[in-house]
Image (cartoon, one colour):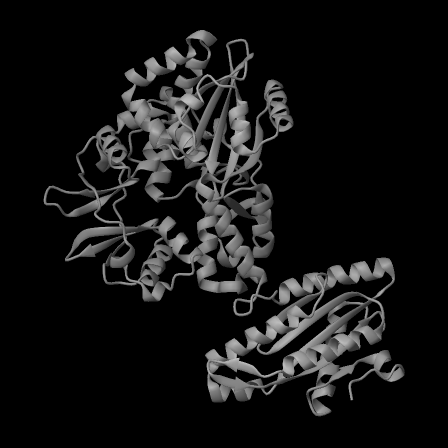
Length: 595
């Protein structure tokens, strides 16, 4: 592929080729593995993407954005699908000798963030991201690009202000787009971003019932396509915004520019200047930082609009620098931080002294230290990922420390939402068949070790179809939720009840002492389920048929026990419903079946 861009002089970057900055050893999964395995791999490694491999060669890529889009399409069936069904393919690759500016231009051209580096045989060597490249290019790269037209995004997602949030979500996923402009009479009237949408989903907003007019951020701020990049950055800082709508000379929409690219592109330059300041003598530090802040207005703009939290300390563990993002999130002002002992931040982050001593020791040995922290400014819990690294002199000695923290609250909440959707029934909130199967397997392993009984109950509602047909599906859903609550209320903390689908529930009772005890629990369930249910002014009554199977009498595996319990449940239905039946030995020898 040929590229017409004229990249800046390679001397501007710390490293010259992709081979200098790649993360070696691509973290990948076989293309034929399940999405459950791929997502677990991403979670364990705390990475935003994973490469799908076939015989060592990259054939696709999974990103967090792609996973969320797939959840919209497939729902809870996603985890059982193959990676090859969901991955983005083909994956963009480049040789390790490609210059970084050329690769960076390629990512901008393609509108993607990840690039897999391959050898001459096409085998994966490692991965680089847009962020890796920007940090190495430094501020000089953006000085070369003098007008925002050269770096803006030209394809912008738009909808009328009267369209629903559901339509905006569909457009974002289909694009994909990170935001949607809301138009009124053909002109930009407001904006809804991907972050806004995650918030709406987390709060349970009915996306189909809310129009953009009601929730969009308005008005939008515009800039002419010929505006210099540094002026656009200053305008974003002044207005406190992250995006500019770009227009042409006639005021027509021409594209969009985001602040994050500009800020991140200059971050490397800022860190280098900060290191120079910290290498000065301790008694000159505060004066040097203040002088740098007064003389470097442009640098200060970048600093105070950065979304990451930055904290720097001397080798004597005195705080020398804190950016505005850190001060705001931790609820401090500059006078409470500069010149103080780092213990100030230990307390704010809830990090024990022993942990920070470990971090200092690790950095002194030439490494970096990662940790997680939780803070609660104004009572709102926020999750942070932190990285401690060293500032070194020409001889390699440590002269100070830099702590960079990133607010990952939205990502953590999204992960929790996806995890909850994957393992719980959306209607009742009970574990679904996947989670129940896992609990059953755990219970069987425990029963085998301890030589005790385990019971499996399969419960099916009698008369539910009549309620559904006569009173409607919404009323039937209310009935299922109330019955689920009654069953769960009878169980121990170690027991599990899950909805298998429709009006069928599976109960796992580990460490059962006697079959008679199981029969007693089944009797309680029959009575609880058989009580009348008040449903939107109407009263309904259902009963239950229960089949029971015991480990090890009726089977040694979860599948075998469920099959025996299912057969026993149908015997209960044949016996007149509203009763229970044991399978196997308990039914033949102990005469425990409900009359």
